[in-house]
Image (cartoon, rainbow, N blue to C red; front, side, top):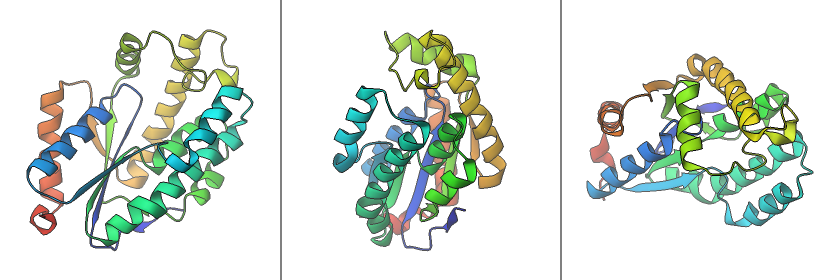
Length: 223
């Protein structure tokens, strides 16, 4: 069970969605906008803990991780960033921006067959974001965006560890499809704000900025 929305002075904004949905571009643009407007902002992204990164890389390279151990490594990464960055900065009154949050684990781990309740319990220490944008793109659009920019898919990225297909592109399609199903199930439960990610970057950014302004009193976070 996820903890309630943050009771701390700061605000937590997360973006979720399939690879290729445009969420990373949008959260980066939000970061730059808020910084240029003079607000207290901190940005963090999935699977980026300096402490855990080498272990994750070795585990992926060995290709012997089970879905459960893969889940635990990502949970460790998140816990390190949460304790060192996210939680302290919410207490300090920052707007914390997360490129992927706990819902990425919920969707991807479930797609790999890990028990959903177990995964949610694993992340039960984390507060629920004040805003979670879910960039909802048709599967084919997300896939095309990724494949246009990647000459080769990575083993775990493509879901090849699951044995769904020996073809990395077909495996990736299956993995993304399963992940999307879980995102769609979670959206109403966790109050995701759906953003039509099939549109151009500028249109999406204007919509997201407006929603941020409506839901957060930004003047409270000026430097």
